[in-house]
Length: 129
Length: 144
Image (tube, rainbow over all chains, first blue to last red; front, side, top):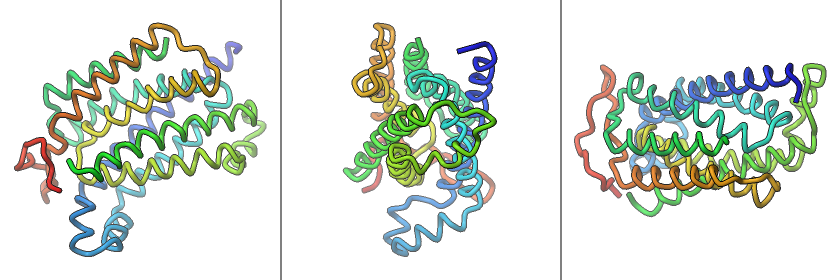
């Protein structure tokens, strides 16, 4: 791997991470607004679930971000190993998502979740080596 | 937490992991994509391995949507990370990439973290017109 493609690699991973987290947070927002699928299905059937999802604008924002991140991943995978791309982007997206879950989605990130998050993050970092 | 929800979490892990592996396998066969070969990137989903990978990622995506409808992102996230453990294992056994000792330790840490969180609360907030408010039943057992 030459110098040029190393820079391109990290740039791709950064774009991948940004799109990934944006996608996750938009999708989580969308699904929270739609509500529990099994409850909606009990009340209005499967089509009620489909209608709920397809009328939620955040769902499409999330889907667009995830589609773009998928093509970025394809491009990244063509020049770097799977065992580097996935953990590298995963560890950064994970941290970004955990912060976003607390401050943007306002979830109660309990002590148990922080400890779990730190263990998982440590694990992802070790997976990179 | 009923049986169906565990099945969905399993689909998330299996779909994302195998999906990534097959997409990577396909992209390795297609070869390096440069700015001069963007057409190859657009056509990549037609490659059999990439297509199989996308089908598995679709399975992941629908399970992910359903799971996020009843659980927090900060609950689902570590659970989905378990897929990276599988990715490392599959990269080792299917793609022949080397897995050093540090990576095995990483695998153990992730497994511990996932085990810890799946025993906790799955939903802590509910949507309200003003934004979100704390979930009323902060107990681990979800409604069936």
